[in-house]
Length: 230
Image (cartoon, rainbow, N blue to C red; front, top):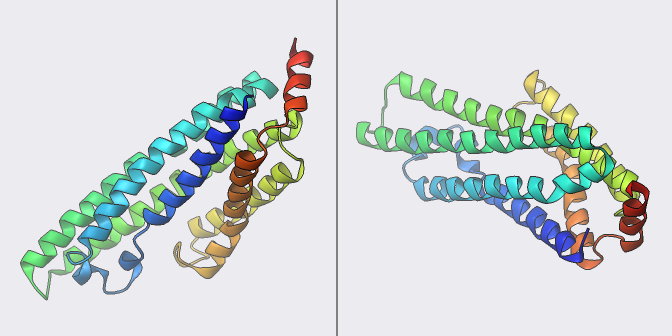
Protein backbone atom coordinates (compact mmCIF):
# COMPACT_ATOMS: atom_id res chain seq x y z
CA UNK A 1 0.00 0.00 0.00
CA UNK A 2 1.46 3.35 -1.08
CA UNK A 3 1.22 6.69 0.77
CA UNK A 4 -0.96 8.03 -2.03
CA UNK A 5 -3.42 5.17 -1.48
CA UNK A 6 -3.69 6.05 2.21
CA UNK A 7 -4.25 9.73 1.46
CA UNK A 8 -6.82 8.93 -1.21
CA UNK A 9 -8.75 6.70 1.18
CA UNK A 10 -8.62 9.36 3.90
CA UNK A 11 -10.00 12.01 1.55
CA UNK A 12 -12.73 9.69 0.28
CA UNK A 13 -13.87 8.83 3.81
CA UNK A 14 -14.08 12.47 4.86
CA UNK A 15 -15.80 13.50 1.64
CA UNK A 16 -18.37 10.72 2.02
CA UNK A 17 -19.14 11.82 5.59
CA UNK A 18 -19.61 15.44 4.48
CA UNK A 19 -21.91 14.32 1.65
CA UNK A 20 -23.87 12.22 4.14
CA UNK A 21 -24.55 15.30 6.25
CA UNK A 22 -25.72 17.40 3.29
CA UNK A 23 -27.82 14.57 1.83
CA UNK A 24 -30.18 14.75 4.80
CA UNK A 25 -33.35 16.84 4.75
CA UNK A 26 -34.43 17.40 8.38
CA UNK A 27 -37.52 19.34 7.26
CA UNK A 28 -39.21 16.23 5.86
CA UNK A 29 -39.07 14.64 9.30
CA UNK A 30 -41.39 17.30 10.73
CA UNK A 31 -45.13 16.79 11.13
CA UNK A 32 -46.02 19.58 8.68
CA UNK A 33 -43.58 18.42 6.02
CA UNK A 34 -46.29 17.96 3.37
CA UNK A 35 -47.24 21.63 3.21
CA UNK A 36 -43.60 22.74 3.19
CA UNK A 37 -42.30 20.38 0.50
CA UNK A 38 -42.60 23.01 -2.21
CA UNK A 39 -40.80 25.65 -0.15
CA UNK A 40 -37.90 23.31 0.72
CA UNK A 41 -37.40 22.16 -2.87
CA UNK A 42 -33.88 23.71 -2.98
CA UNK A 43 -32.95 21.62 0.09
CA UNK A 44 -34.26 18.49 -1.62
CA UNK A 45 -32.26 19.26 -4.77
CA UNK A 46 -29.12 19.74 -2.69
CA UNK A 47 -29.80 16.43 -0.92
CA UNK A 48 -30.24 14.67 -4.28
CA UNK A 49 -26.92 16.04 -5.51
CA UNK A 50 -24.98 15.11 -2.38
CA UNK A 51 -26.52 11.63 -2.13
CA UNK A 52 -25.51 10.98 -5.74
CA UNK A 53 -21.97 12.14 -5.03
CA UNK A 54 -21.90 10.07 -1.83
CA UNK A 55 -22.94 6.95 -3.72
CA UNK A 56 -20.10 7.49 -6.20
CA UNK A 57 -17.64 8.07 -3.34
CA UNK A 58 -18.77 4.82 -1.70
CA UNK A 59 -17.97 2.92 -4.90
CA UNK A 60 -14.58 4.63 -5.00
CA UNK A 61 -13.93 3.59 -1.38
CA UNK A 62 -14.67 -0.02 -2.32
CA UNK A 63 -12.24 0.16 -5.25
CA UNK A 64 -9.45 1.59 -3.07
CA UNK A 65 -9.95 -0.80 -0.13
CA UNK A 66 -10.60 -4.02 -2.04
CA UNK A 67 -6.85 -4.80 -2.44
CA UNK A 68 -6.40 -4.41 1.33
CA UNK A 69 -9.04 -7.04 2.08
CA UNK A 70 -7.67 -9.26 -0.69
CA UNK A 71 -4.21 -8.98 0.86
CA UNK A 72 -5.64 -10.65 3.97
CA UNK A 73 -8.05 -13.15 2.34
CA UNK A 74 -9.16 -13.43 -1.32
CA UNK A 75 -12.40 -15.17 -0.30
CA UNK A 76 -13.24 -12.44 2.21
CA UNK A 77 -12.44 -9.86 -0.46
CA UNK A 78 -15.19 -11.29 -2.68
CA UNK A 79 -17.70 -11.08 0.18
CA UNK A 80 -16.49 -7.57 0.98
CA UNK A 81 -16.98 -6.46 -2.61
CA UNK A 82 -20.47 -7.96 -2.79
CA UNK A 83 -21.71 -6.45 0.47
CA UNK A 84 -20.30 -2.98 -0.04
CA UNK A 85 -21.38 -2.61 -3.67
CA UNK A 86 -24.87 -3.68 -2.60
CA UNK A 87 -24.86 -0.94 0.02
CA UNK A 88 -23.75 1.65 -2.54
CA UNK A 89 -26.48 0.50 -4.92
CA UNK A 90 -29.15 1.19 -2.29
CA UNK A 91 -27.86 4.77 -2.06
CA UNK A 92 -28.45 5.24 -5.78
CA UNK A 93 -31.98 3.83 -5.47
CA UNK A 94 -32.66 6.13 -2.51
CA UNK A 95 -32.17 9.15 -4.78
CA UNK A 96 -35.39 8.23 -6.58
CA UNK A 97 -37.46 8.71 -3.40
CA UNK A 98 -36.10 12.23 -2.99
CA UNK A 99 -37.00 13.02 -6.59
CA UNK A 100 -40.53 11.71 -6.01
CA UNK A 101 -40.87 13.80 -2.85
CA UNK A 102 -39.87 16.83 -4.88
CA UNK A 103 -42.60 16.06 -7.43
CA UNK A 104 -45.10 15.47 -4.64
CA UNK A 105 -44.32 18.89 -3.22
CA UNK A 106 -45.03 20.49 -6.59
CA UNK A 107 -48.37 18.68 -6.79
CA UNK A 108 -49.36 19.73 -3.27
CA UNK A 109 -48.50 23.34 -4.08
CA UNK A 110 -50.85 23.23 -7.06
CA UNK A 111 -53.70 21.70 -5.04
CA UNK A 112 -53.58 24.32 -2.30
CA UNK A 113 -53.80 24.45 1.48
CA UNK A 114 -56.02 21.37 1.90
CA UNK A 115 -54.57 18.53 -0.19
CA UNK A 116 -56.49 15.24 -0.44
CA UNK A 117 -55.74 12.62 2.23
CA UNK A 118 -53.99 10.32 -0.22
CA UNK A 119 -51.22 12.88 -0.62
CA UNK A 120 -50.42 12.42 3.08
CA UNK A 121 -50.37 8.64 2.65
CA UNK A 122 -48.14 8.90 -0.41
CA UNK A 123 -45.75 11.25 1.36
CA UNK A 124 -45.50 8.95 4.37
CA UNK A 125 -44.84 5.97 2.10
CA UNK A 126 -42.06 7.83 0.30
CA UNK A 127 -40.45 8.94 3.56
CA UNK A 128 -40.54 5.45 5.03
CA UNK A 129 -39.21 3.95 1.80
CA UNK A 130 -36.34 6.44 1.77
CA UNK A 131 -35.48 5.68 5.40
CA UNK A 132 -35.64 1.96 4.70
CA UNK A 133 -33.38 2.21 1.67
CA UNK A 134 -30.82 4.49 3.33
CA UNK A 135 -30.80 3.14 6.88
CA UNK A 136 -31.48 -0.57 6.34
CA UNK A 137 -30.83 -1.45 2.70
CA UNK A 138 -27.62 0.58 2.59
CA UNK A 139 -26.40 0.35 6.19
CA UNK A 140 -26.66 -3.42 6.72
CA UNK A 141 -24.49 -4.57 3.78
CA UNK A 142 -22.15 -1.60 4.15
CA UNK A 143 -21.28 -2.26 7.81
CA UNK A 144 -21.06 -6.02 7.23
CA UNK A 145 -18.52 -5.22 4.53
CA UNK A 146 -16.85 -2.91 7.03
CA UNK A 147 -16.31 -5.90 9.31
CA UNK A 148 -14.17 -7.57 6.63
CA UNK A 149 -12.23 -4.34 6.04
CA UNK A 150 -11.47 -3.84 9.74
CA UNK A 151 -10.51 -7.51 10.03
CA UNK A 152 -8.05 -7.00 7.18
CA UNK A 153 -6.67 -3.87 8.87
CA UNK A 154 -6.24 -5.86 12.08
CA UNK A 155 -4.44 -8.75 10.38
CA UNK A 156 -2.24 -6.70 8.05
CA UNK A 157 -1.35 -4.15 10.76
CA UNK A 158 -1.47 -1.36 8.21
CA UNK A 159 -2.98 0.86 10.89
CA UNK A 160 -2.78 0.78 14.71
CA UNK A 161 -4.75 -2.01 16.37
CA UNK A 162 -7.05 0.35 18.28
CA UNK A 163 -8.61 1.70 15.08
CA UNK A 164 -10.07 -1.59 13.77
CA UNK A 165 -11.07 -2.61 17.32
CA UNK A 166 -12.94 0.68 17.57
CA UNK A 167 -14.44 -0.13 14.18
CA UNK A 168 -15.74 -3.52 15.40
CA UNK A 169 -17.42 -1.81 18.36
CA UNK A 170 -18.97 0.83 16.14
CA UNK A 171 -20.23 -1.78 13.69
CA UNK A 172 -21.86 -3.76 16.51
CA UNK A 173 -23.63 -0.65 17.84
CA UNK A 174 -24.77 0.38 14.35
CA UNK A 175 -26.18 -3.11 13.75
CA UNK A 176 -28.07 -2.85 17.04
CA UNK A 177 -29.42 0.58 16.03
CA UNK A 178 -30.54 -0.80 12.66
CA UNK A 179 -32.23 -3.78 14.29
CA UNK A 180 -34.06 -1.50 16.75
CA UNK A 181 -35.21 0.64 13.81
CA UNK A 182 -36.41 -2.41 11.88
CA UNK A 183 -38.38 -3.60 14.93
CA UNK A 184 -39.83 -0.09 15.43
CA UNK A 185 -38.27 0.11 18.90
CA UNK A 186 -36.82 3.50 17.97
CA UNK A 187 -39.20 6.01 16.44
CA UNK A 188 -37.48 6.96 13.22
CA UNK A 189 -33.89 7.66 12.25
CA UNK A 190 -33.95 11.01 14.08
CA UNK A 191 -34.48 9.23 17.41
CA UNK A 192 -31.79 10.21 19.98
CA UNK A 193 -31.06 6.55 20.77
CA UNK A 194 -30.61 5.71 17.09
CA UNK A 195 -28.24 8.64 16.59
CA UNK A 196 -26.23 7.87 19.74
CA UNK A 197 -25.70 4.25 18.69
CA UNK A 198 -24.39 5.38 15.29
CA UNK A 199 -21.99 8.01 16.65
CA UNK A 200 -19.08 5.65 17.52
CA UNK A 201 -18.77 4.30 13.98
CA UNK A 202 -18.98 7.78 12.48
CA UNK A 203 -16.18 9.03 14.75
CA UNK A 204 -14.12 5.92 14.02
CA UNK A 205 -14.28 6.71 10.29
CA UNK A 206 -13.23 10.29 11.00
CA UNK A 207 -10.33 9.09 13.15
CA UNK A 208 -9.30 6.60 10.46
CA UNK A 209 -9.43 9.26 7.76
CA UNK A 210 -7.36 11.73 9.79
CA UNK A 211 -4.80 9.04 10.66
CA UNK A 212 -4.43 8.05 7.00
CA UNK A 213 -4.00 11.68 5.92
CA UNK A 214 -1.45 12.44 8.64
CA UNK A 215 0.44 9.17 9.07
CA UNK A 216 -0.54 6.91 6.18
CA UNK A 217 -0.20 3.14 6.25
CA UNK A 218 2.56 1.49 8.24
CA UNK A 219 5.30 0.79 5.72
CA UNK A 220 6.90 -2.01 7.70
CA UNK A 221 3.59 -3.83 7.93
CA UNK A 222 3.06 -3.57 4.18
CA UNK A 223 6.52 -4.95 3.53
CA UNK A 224 6.16 -7.81 6.00
CA UNK A 225 2.77 -8.82 4.58
CA UNK A 226 4.15 -8.75 1.05
CA UNK A 227 7.10 -10.96 2.09
CA UNK A 228 4.77 -13.34 3.90
CA UNK A 229 2.55 -13.68 0.83
CA UNK A 230 5.56 -14.17 -1.36
